Image (cartoon, rainbow, N blue to C red; front, side):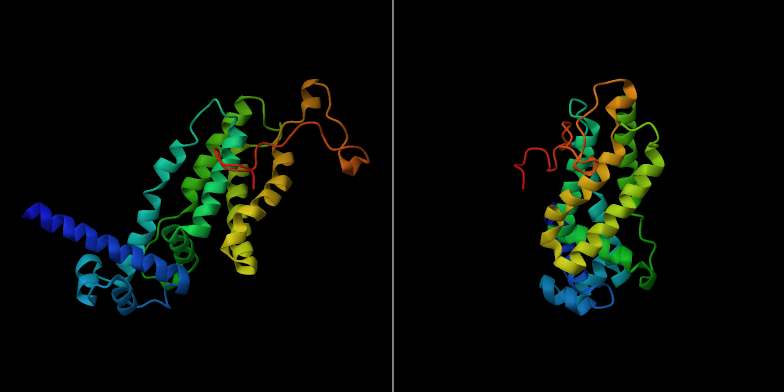
Length: 232
């Protein structure tokens, strides 16, 4: 009997969390009430307060639940047989897809943007992103794939911030469905500044780029889609 009650409690908490995430993502923190969460979940307001105590509490739970998916996501990009810059690109596509499609991720991003209106200390979502990007850039540097003047930690910090700003503005102007397609344009701009120039190591230089008045470079960019997916 005790196990049945525990399972029911978990199911209730999950339904409240998912309902709150959908509403926060759509309407923001101020635009969502406990009654809205109750109606969306099919549970009573008393049930909301029993499991989360306050609207701030459920907002914090939404953000924390989104964080819980990160270890599994990062594990998918731990294969050192795949060049680290390719893993960085693929990871960014997964994040962009989550920002476009996953209600918990979308809600977490919106709640973070509205954090000054929430009476709770929300965890910084950029720490994990920046740590993962720093590690991948450090691997690229150790493997001789990174430009000599690119430092992993500050570069990762800049990439994550510009990526998040790019995603936010793209969604505002074109809607979340446009994110994965627009991301390839962002990487076409970013990747050439990250990669080591083969001429710096005495290798045969790539052909001139169109900007030089010649043909495109012979050296391809890393795959611009998540691992295991076909090009968009």
